[in-house]
Length: 451
Image (cartoon, rainbow, N blue to C red; front, side, top):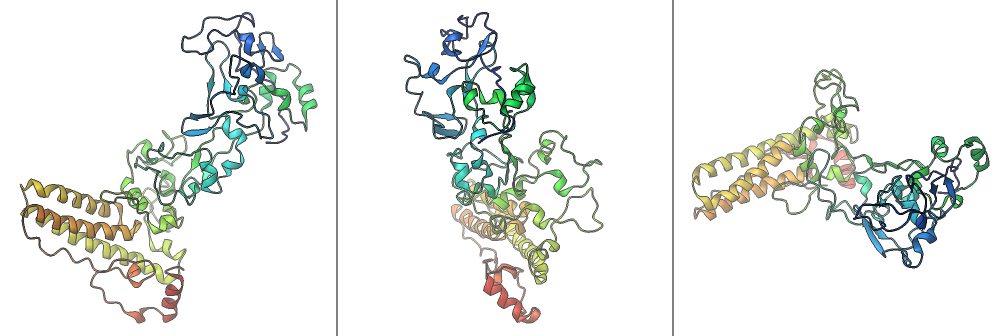
């Protein structure tokens, strides 16, 4: 953390204030492991106010107390770390009292994650997943996205590539000390600050809680890829006749008022939908695209209406020839979805009342709904796979009923990245190779479908 201009306060407000006599032991909660310890047994450092004193490290590691420095490792919220001698190699001398504090009075000691970010500043830059994983060693504590989509982090194919793929803006801890913190302990603040300018005052402030001087860090995810975190203002200039503002309920995101808004689209983009054993994220998502990469406002758009995806989004990154591809994807996906939907309806009629056939038909229905509601263009390869699998489930349902299944719906070529079928996705649409220049196609094949 190094030298800081205003590290010149000694605020022990988090310690033993409220004792009538510093050496008195007063009644405490029966759950407090320090209930029989006198205040002065711990607060034996420099006296900062009439009834307040710092807590030197020796007071905690004295014989009969925490002589070995406490447990070897501990878990705090979602973080597990080596506890004994924690921070011993830091440029800032850390003591037990830096993290373990209690409110003024007789409340038990507590430890929170707030002071952690003050020391782990470099890790907060989150340049790669390894830095985040130094603290966040387990990822199963994350339950869902801001819109309520279940998002189990363990096993996600992009986690090892970098947490910042989604969590691209993480709040860094403020290390400056507000002058008001100094006045809580120092009467002559101007003199103290003048003496401390340019000095690293950590060594003269040991035994005092980090948050006695520094403000709470607020280390948290401040912004995420809009594929998993959606704010109304990203797509709506107006909602319900008013402009979106941060003061809206909750986080200002749609789910503050509308539960699960755009959940189906998120599920398809992230590749976590019914019938898929492991996540199958969209190629576009893995390439770093967000919702606003494709959902661009057009001149004359009604500000009360959400921004729809349009071909201009394709042309903003790709060659102009790609402007037709979005329509091809939508036409091809709609035709395939209609075919599977029709096959499912016929199976429902033919197998009505056959209990053994219903589970497969129900799963097929969920797959079709995932594609139709989620928008196939959000994850074309997974959408095609879901429709093929839905057709297979329909065949399985006939077999479970002891019936001969009709031919599954013809779904044409699978969209394969880098091949013609990835763009030319319309059903029964002949490929006219001279529609576009030979140079364009050679470029596509050379770059694997790139720009």
